[in-house]
Image (tube, rainbow, N blue to C red; front, side, top):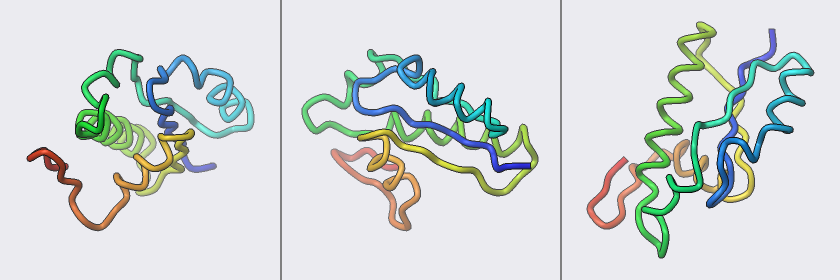
Length: 102
């Protein structure tokens, strides 16, 4: 069975913006879910503010997929800014900005 896949949408994008990509992966046999974000979820990050709220939603989604499919790995797809935020999530050092820590 292919690894489950989590999609993190780009900056100010909602989960619904990734619907075609998610469906395409599911149609190819990859269990896939998009981090359930709305455009409003991005507002607290505007102007260089912390991404901790987005990272927490990503973390919850990843943990749900790991548990649901009983696996230890997933595919993580970040589209466009979702890519660099995913890299922060996968990083070895804690993310700290403006006293927020993830």
